[in-house]
Image (cartoon, rainbow, N blue to C red; front, side):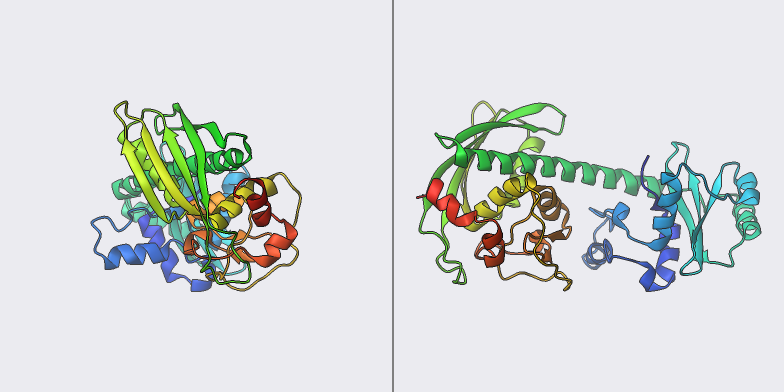
Length: 354
């Protein structure tokens, strides 16, 4: 079952309710940028399912409980389908939710608590339901959103395979491993990851990053099509490479790349795999707003990948909340507190990069 999403009409109504009912600003900043840049489709790459609103929380709770909730009885008779009452008791607001012909839930109304069953039924009767049911624009936006989310999930899966591949290559005797990735058609492809070189000296954790050292990694994918190559390149971009020396499509359709990445980022990726198999908990918790960090933190892979791909906040090993995708981190040192808790950076240099 899909999560509840608002129709465009309900979305406008949500914006007219008190602003503090929105628990997150997403995805409004992106929507505003699209409107400012006069995009033909302002909802391009907008994830409306990420809307965090109290009424949507209440609506999703109804879905999670198997629709064991109050219905608008008169409204349901008028609409000739169940119309569920959605309530947020803390704010005194309520809404109406219906299921479309595919059984997917939609929030079709949002307003204040004086909106009764009779008023919903009267509005439905007056409009003959045409303003309440999701329309072609709603479905088109959802289809575009589904495609965008599918591409993000594929990029996340590819990034996951890359991180594990780099981790295993650093530990392997010949610094080369093979791993599998899934292309957009659902077929598995082989990916060869090799650590070519480690250049420079270990980064001094007391410095600002001027003595940064880099590692060059080669990536060879099997024969693939344009969309699969784009997905792989998108996943590699999340590693914030300093440079991409080679990006060659070979005669058999395979893609060969040599990517130079900061040692600090390699340490962060390596640590994410190590931490995913440990029970280490943050030593402290910081409740400051998400800000650009002066250093790179260690974080579990299960949190690192969604943070990089979806821009979600994650909790570091030392207890700081931050969003890795918002950090231009190629020139930053490793967090000294994270390194004390899980000494990965210096260990990397001793084992493989000297």
